[in-house]
Image (cartoon, rainbow, N blue to C red; front, side, top):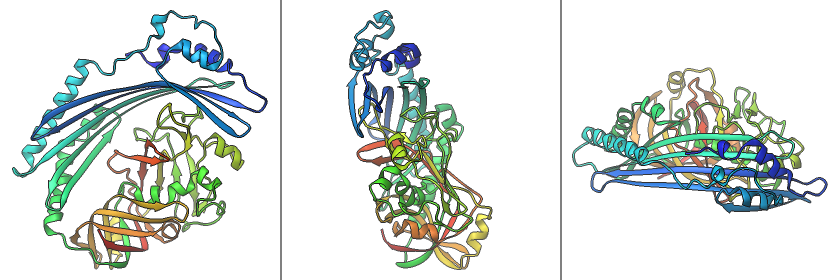
Length: 450
């Protein structure tokens, strides 16, 4: 399968974007995308189903007088790209060089992944109770992009993601466990059968012994890598520049102010290796760099694309991201995380006489304008006299993002990125992200029925 770089070299893209007619002070970018997917589903009753997919297209975006215009089209035909950009000249290459490649994965590639799924499913099923109903989903994604901006070098990204998810019918509903890595080889290094089996066994054991969570205000300890939901959802979105510009963020007037205890720091960093939100350049062609959001408890930056960065007078932080060529870029998180502290996680637990331990969080509701959040914890335990005692049935955790940030009391030295299978929705667009936290203790959150 020919790469974008081999089908559209730098000189072609430079010539195309140079042909765009722009008024003084205006700018434009040309975005090319090729995304291949393969979804393999296996369960104990229906066997294996394979669904390949391919998305190819380009978009020309113009910004003039403060207004954006996007022209996007399916397919990657050089003549049409030049026509849209206003050139009208021959591409200078043979049509065969640029002919649209409609192939996704070869038959041998699909067969290899199919065998992997069947072997994984059979091995996992053999370890679970015989009455269990188990299903597996494997999603393999490869995305290439090329971005051309007049006067800039051509920027290119190529990333791969493999995510395997297992669902198991439990007494109180479906139990889910997943793993994600940048390749099949990296995924195999995690010993997925043993890892998924251990996670599901823990969940089944907790279900058998679980009791209802108490209700009210409690000290809460969040496990490392609990999906990163706490920081990503409760605080991260409110630090995205478009929400700040709309006045829809509780942090909008707090730049340079203390928003957390002095030992708290946070970053967004797309250069972290082998994570869902990693890339070399954002979807506007800006080179990635880590952005310190909070340092020693003080708010240092917002996350911006080119437009939000210009309007805030701070430039882009390389967080302009789009789901596909059909979409406008938006300020989005990549790999957002609370930095590790220097405390022993076990010591944090021992120093907590009573509270709630959250082992895993799933989705919920957040109002970015106020920071009010309401999350569902699918795994947790009661803390009594510094020990984990009774496992708890699913429950809710509620609070206010800025208040919870200020209420962080302890930070562990065990930063974790969770299971590596994350994505985030905003304005109808889904993009892959990673979110990390170490063990942390919050003074008070509201616990309720699940």
